[in-house]
Length: 204
Ligand SMILES: [Zn+2]
Image (cartoon, rainbow, N blue to C red; front, top):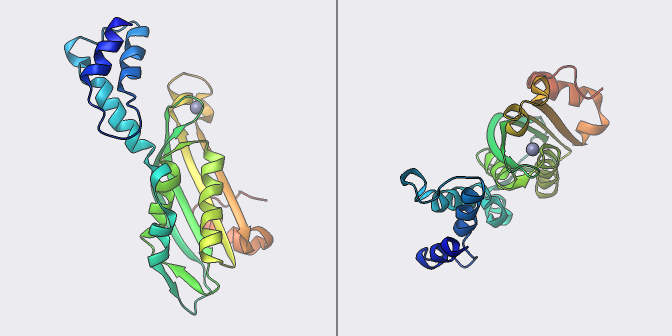
């Protein structure tokens, strides 16, 4: 505990929220490591920086991402953005899960700048998540912002908590989907989307 207090004094707290670096220092030592050895000296600060980045989605402002990028158009064909890479942290183990998100929507009157969709994905991926909720939050957010005829989101991910711990290796890849509006009510629409992103057999 003494070492822990010393570290609290040494590390400057520049950001308003309390520093997590001392907790990482304590974590290292409780795991049987020597936090004062060369390679670990700055690890608590690095881990804090990484965690702040990886959970930065809590502080992203959806209005700022979306509102300046909405355009009125007469276009009612499916818009698809495929293979959006994402990296997230599973809320059960704080280990990464990562993969690709495919997003589609059918505009009613509004479209969104295509580059904004990956930013919406990041906003929800950079939090503590489960894959199912991540998928739904992306879909629901676009549904509310665009008021489209439909939104479909498919997420394919691999989970370190399953891969690294040696459990269920054969199931370490998971696919989740969220279908709203026409993507939910019309099988042809859903199937068109799923086949375009390579998931012909999903949804039923
Ligand atoms: Zn997990």
